[in-house]
Image (cartoon, rainbow, N blue to C red):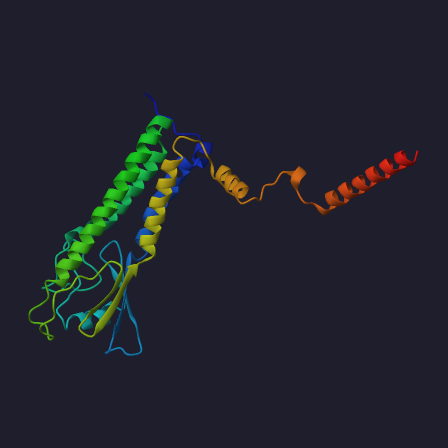
Length: 262
C-alpha cells in the first residue's frame, strides 16, 4: 500500500497541526533550563544565588558559588557518568547516568508527535493521538519520579567528611522552599519545563478534537462568538439604525393621527 502525505491544508486542523507544534516545542525546550534553584545564604548577604539545570548534563548560573556552599554539608552535583558536564563531578557525588539520556527522551516524544501528525487516515490519526498523549505523559511522569528519587538519594548520602557535621538528611523538592544549615533554597520549574507542559497541553487539545476537522480559524471564530463579538447585524445597536427606526416610528404616529382627524 502506497503512503501519501496528507494535504497541506490538513495540517490546519487542530488534530494534525497541534502535534507538529508540540514536536517543535519539545526540541526547543532543550535550549532552556528545566529547573531553577535560588539560594540565600549568610555568606552572600546581598545576593541571591541562582542555579539553572537543563535536561542534559549542564548547569548554569552561580553554580561555582553554590558548589562552594554545598561542600560544607557534603552535598554535590550529580555525576551523569556517560556525559562530561560543564563541572568536575566530585568522587562522592551520586551517579545519575539517566541524566545523560535526557535529550533522547525529548527527541523521541518530538519525533512521535510529528509521526502521528502524518497519519494516512483519520482512524490511524485518532489512535496515534491517544497513544502519543499516554506515552508522553508516561515518559515525563517517570522522569519526574526519577528526579525526585535522585534528589532524595543525594540529600541522604552526604559526605561524612564534610566540614559541617551532624546535618540531617533532606530531600530538595521540585517545587517549593527548604532550609539546610544556614542556607534557604527555593525551587521552581524553568522555561524549558513550561514549554514541555505547553506541548503536552497541545496534545490534549488535539486529542479532544480528534473526531472533528476543526481548524485554528474555526476555533477562533467559536471563541469570538462565545465572547459576543459576532452579533447579528439586525440586532446591532448602530446609532444610524436607531435614528432610522425612530424616524420611522414618528412617521407611523403621524400617519395614525392624520387618519384619526380624517
